[in-house]
Length: 302
Ligand code: UT7
Image (tube, rainbow, N blue to C red):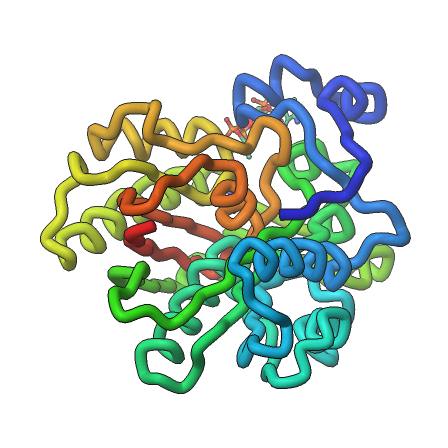
């Protein structure tokens, strides 16, 4: 994982906005977030995370045959930011492309990578979630800007006889299109600024993540009691706790990284993977929900 150096606490935000550490912590669980400087880029953060993933997998960049970057905040609308990461890594033998599924982007990318590996079309796939959300929020809107942070995480998926990804399930529902979107009508925000119906997103997130996790477990004839770790998209600690409570999963099996990193959109899951002490053989369930709406779940044997 990789995050920009600068950390911004709730107290610092409350000097510029009508908000407080107490409000932000009690409503979201966030204490601080990492915010990019003008010199940071999505490609730079993604590259740093990818370098670490390659190192820990002991795979050379020249052996990577696909790079999938999940991002909502690409450095440019064209070309794909993944190609810049390819160049930075000197991954000459890879094809590289971006995918856009907002906060579910990492799960979508993981699922695409899994299909390519299962069909034998790829052997080593870098899956990256990288975002600079701070360039897409209106810093005068206290209802959204306090929620987001910047960062990246990456995994290297390799071909194995016994697949580590047991299954992935992806969903979307365009009926939620205008519940969370970037508004490009204001010229001061060339990338658009995030607009959200927080309550609607909140209640949908709790429902669909629970449903998709139950469906993913059932598909593998597994039960909630088999789960060692639940890693959810980090949008709100209360959402994470509600899903765990509804599933009947003890909180010590639930990964919470939102306190120090806030909502880094497609990067929250790979950042959380990097921060969790996962042991071989453990059963890990991932789930996310984001704009679109998009959502999904994955079941992994680590
Ligand atoms: O990553 C994609 C998925 N995103 C999510 O899952 C986010 C889902 N939604 C949420 O997490 C929550 O809805 C929020 C954290 C965004 C908001 O929490 P809430 O409990 O739903 O608050 P609210 O929007 O209903 O606002 C309650 C009050 C309002 O004041 P009034 O109208 O009751 O006087 C807001 O104006 O809190 C006010 N408020 C704030 N006060 C202090 C909103 N933002 C702030 C703030 N500081 N930063």
